[in-house]
Image 1 (cartoon, rainbow, N blue to C red):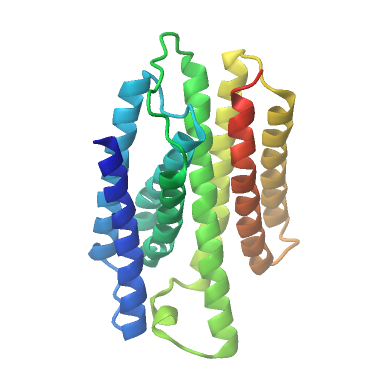
Image 2 (cartoon, rainbow, N blue to C red; image 1 turned 180 degrees about the horizontal axis):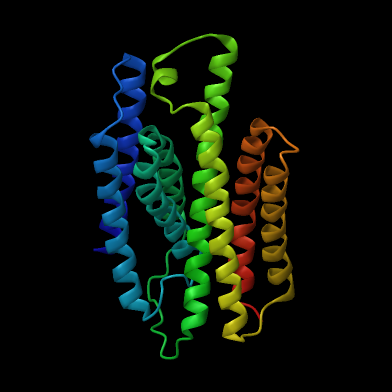
Length: 261
C-alpha cells in the first residue's frame, strides 16, 4: 500500500511538470489552481506514505536513506505549499515539481527496507532534530528554486527576448526577496534543529558533526553577505543554488554517519 502511495505522488509531480512544459510551449500557461492542486495531491500521497512508514517503524520515518530522500521531497513541497501562495509565486510550483519528482524517482530505485524495525525506545529530541533538519533543507531547496527563477528572469530581461515564461514569472525584485527570506527560514529551522540535537545528549560521529556544522556556517556566510549587500542579488541566487546542491550531495554521507557512533 505504501509503495502505491509513493508511485501516485511521483506521477502527480511528473504530471504537474509535464503540464507546465506543455502550456508554456503552447503559450497558454496561466498560473493558478491546476499546478497547486496537483502538487497538493502529491503532497497528500507522500504524507500518507510517511504516516504508514512511521506506524511501521514506531518513529519518525528517517531510519534509512530511502526514507530520508522521500522525507526531503515531502519537506520541499511542504515549504512551497506554505510559502508559495503567500508570495503569490504560482509558477514556483512548476519549478518545485521536477525537484520533488527527481527525489522520489531516486527513492524508487533505492533499496527500501522491507522489514522495518519497530523501535521501542524513542528520544523525542532526536526525532525533532532529524525531522526539522530536513524541513530546513526543504526551505533551502525552495530558495534554490527561487534562485533559478531569478536567473531565468534576469537572462530574459537582459537579452530582451520576451516569452510566455517572462510574463508569468514574478517580478525580479520579488524573486530576490523570496530567495533571501527562504534562506533565512531554512537557517532558522536548521539552528533550532541543531539546538534540539544538543539537547538530545546523544553521541554524534565527529565527521557528521563537522559536516553539518560546515553547512550551517556557509549558509550563515550567505546571509551575512546578503545583509552587508557586498554581493549582487544575482550572485546570491547563484550561491543559493550551489549551496543546496552541495547540501544534497552531503546528505547521503550524513545519513550514513547517523547510524555510526
